[in-house]
Length: 377
Image 1 (cartoon, rainbow, N blue to C red):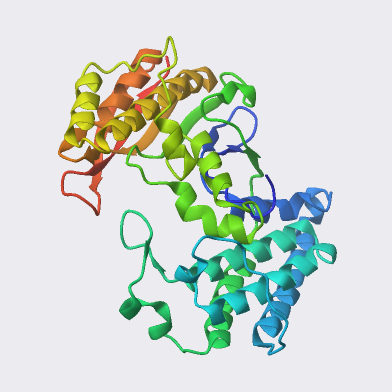
Image 2: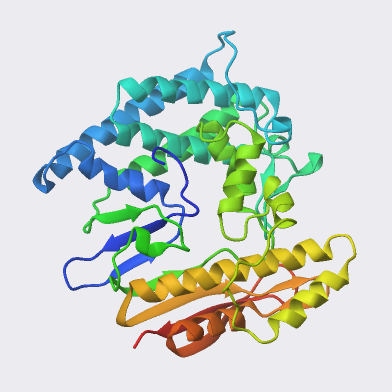
């Protein structure tokens, strides 16, 4: 997908030139992708990059002022809002109206501005949208604020002032970022982490640095739904569940019901001797939800078996791999994620496996993050 879609599952690659390092990192690469597209969307050579960037930033400034005018407008035209379930939990009605007006202006600019400029306006919109939502990111996953903690009690109550302030801050940061020069042109590739060689050349990466989803039932689609609804990539809740089911570790919506029907594929074995006992302990820990959580953990690592095999194929000899992962706890059962990843890497042929504890996480006291590193001979 293009546009403002935050690529949670896709892999981005950066090429540092012939014979130098290449990187691929699954990240939400939307901002960097749109910034780099300034250089290419006009079909200009590198010597023309500076005036191209100036034109794009100029359009951003014009678009930003148009959005501010729409926010301040008191016309009675009803604004479009996405069909996000219980959207009133995310934004109050006055804020929703202003968000809808801002989005309408950006959509109207699709015909007037370059794709790069329009997409950067969408990035600014996403920042404004989440800054004005009644949500908190102070925990492991997003949570809704309680009425006495809500944003609207801490800032001016006029929705126009709230949205305008958030838009100025977001758009100023985006314009400043767009003005910076990118010395090396990145390359972005969307592909399945379990089938890397479909899009990536064998033995083409010297170093891999990433942090995959953790097996802790945190759904990224839950966090990303607002962006995807507002930008038109989701239209109903089932689409979110279906997308999460395609991802490693997804459990949102219908993905959970799909787990009850999932069976381990033939020929797939997770090379960790203690995993069977751990899965059984999780299943027995709770009669109602234990079995489905046990299946969730098993599927996660079966998917990671496929990923590790593909990873080995695309890393060059002497290439290094560094994965930031976190352990998990289901009921009273500890899941040693870092040790399982180490076993996965060793089973596919990586050597010099090392596990380093880097920090304690902000949730349960037993949970930490680690770097699992290894090398290909």
